[in-house]
Image 1 (spheres, rainbow, N blue to C red):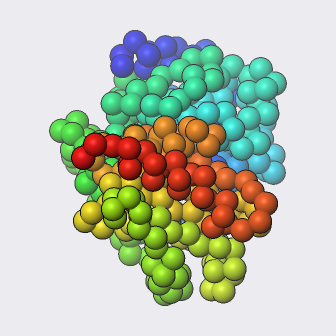
Image 2: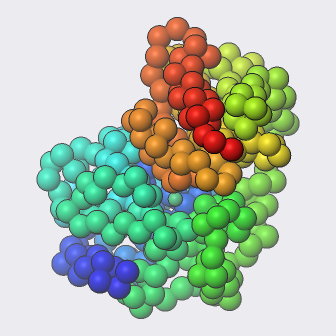
Image 3: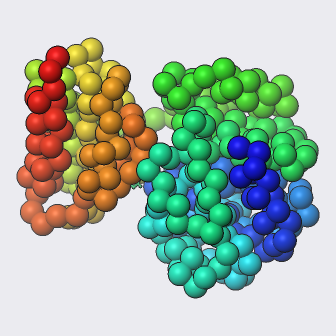
Length: 327
Ligand code: 5GP
Ligand code: MN
């Protein structure tokens, strides 16, 4: 860790104007990493621009510095360094990929095992729970001073990417990192309330539709479901407003693999995959052009016709792998 993190620090030292880019469909870890690293870089005496080519969910609006995150259409000075965080492949940063194509020197800081090592300098370590935990180690190495706001922002990614300290990526280092950030002023209750307890009633109605669409296969070890564009439109919601249902599917006692698809627009869906104990869902995600972790992955599916038929290839792949196992 120290060697890779040190080379990141020397790149930051040499640069003046740094773009910190997160991924499309940003989650808590992405937003936490983009903002915490940008603030850290500024406290290190350099200019930093936090950037995400996607709408930021209203849940995050209560957090400090969120309004500073630039979208692609806003004016952005050409950076002399781009640091990509929490993204396993360059397509994940949306149109900011243009800067990579233009040859701007680049760094990636990421914890996905499926990372494609697409930057000039790659600090990729799947043993970390979250990219936010890597950022904490990096900012410690840079001797950055933490106030309550920075501690809160950095804590956000560790809490969300571990499912609030429940997933298999939790080890004692996660609790140590969280404890340090809480002692610096991060408020766990504020984060949990902002993320978990701000649902609209329409989200529960949508959940009812998603429950109606559940199919169980492979002797109930595989659960999948989906929501179409029409389902979202019925409640004036978008797929960005409805996350987490794949976790509900995995919570079924008999289930090893869960798949949930949401139709973002006509002919395009985001597919989320989860496993409970041993199945490597990242292999499925990679087969469909996506990526992620062994127990949490995803991909974007493009198709003609209806979503349910478009899903059948992935559904069959998972089903047949489970059927072929000796149990
Ligand atoms: P989620 O299902 O919550 O969207 O994503 C689960 C995990 O898979 C996250 O770590 C996320 O970064 C990764 N992931 C989701 N969708 C994609 C995708 O389209 N491409 C890649 N490379 N990773 C994805
Ligand atoms: Mn992450």
